[in-house]
Length: 138
Image (tube, rainbow, N blue to C red; front, side, top):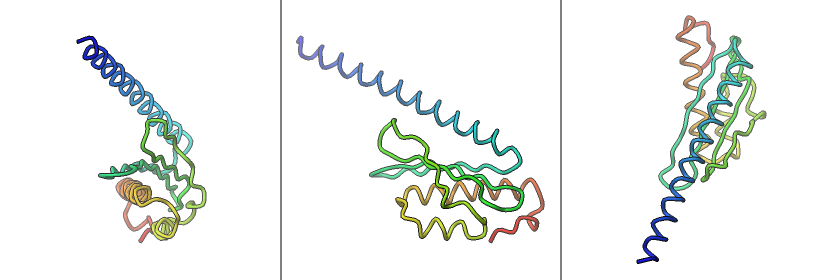
């Protein structure tokens, strides 16, 4: 009976540790999004996530400016709550060929999916804020 109690206590401790670690990761995500939004207050920010059934999921942040240029690209992927955002500076540039640059990059498929979706969100936000013809993204 003592072994069962010890097992239940360990299970409860692991569950509590998972809750605390998830909360910290959520705080990290919020702080990165807020910092990025403050840094690029004149652009359009898109975020997205991709959850893989098996393997690594990914979260992406893409910022495009008023001139349809990708200014900042961040991604976070991993299997644990210790994953952090990484800047992907080689993907910055014109918005018209962003999806192509992502497709040929050596990133994992989940990260590519999240980046493409975040880019779509940023473009949609940009086109909602101004006339669709003024954003030259194909």
